[in-house]
Length: 141
Image (cartoon, rainbow, N blue to C red):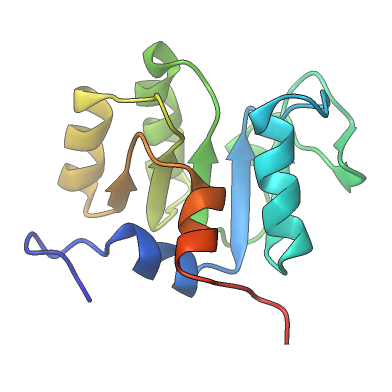
């Protein structure tokens, strides 16, 4: 079900996504930026870690920036401080990502404005893994 403003809601975005680029994916297995995308990977989503300081994260080849991804992305998931959100939203718009998701604790009014102006779906201050669990969503057959 679409929200009143025409944007898809968090559950819809996640249910329709297949490929998720994770900006700020971490090699540290104790950080949410590692455990959350790893959980999504275990439930069948294709995860592309975006981290300029890592060759791979959870056994998946990492790329330095969103612009380095050479395939369509369904969702850009952000594990970066709020002050970086605007730059990430701009990069997501540049690669024509249909949705941006800022993880729990990350809010950006300017990021939201940019996403809305570009016509892309936007979620902030919500956890991808929690939404997956609440909706009992999986990409496994």
